Length: 107
Image 1 (cartoon, helix red, strand yellow):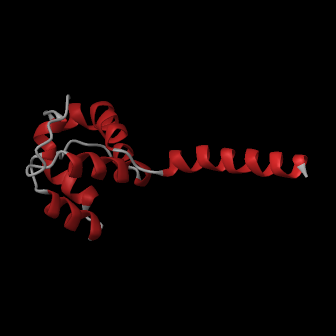
Image 2: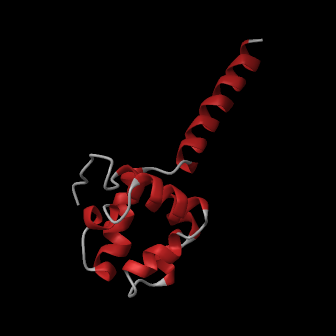
């Protein structure tokens, strides 16, 4: 019985670590913006985030147009900086620091 409970505990603990990396994060989005987009855009993440309100960023994300919106403001950005796995993090960053959020990123 102890072995079974120990195995279940380890499995649950392992799954919790795996699942947290699957969630998007505004801090990760900020780091990605600095690394992948800032040079191509020519301005920092605070300027990019403030381009829209939270509702507007949500509508863009829901419509699946985030990649197009980034390209609109940053025409020099390369497609490899807009991989699908990065877009959720970019969205969380833009949404968290949108013009009506009251938050200011440190980048």
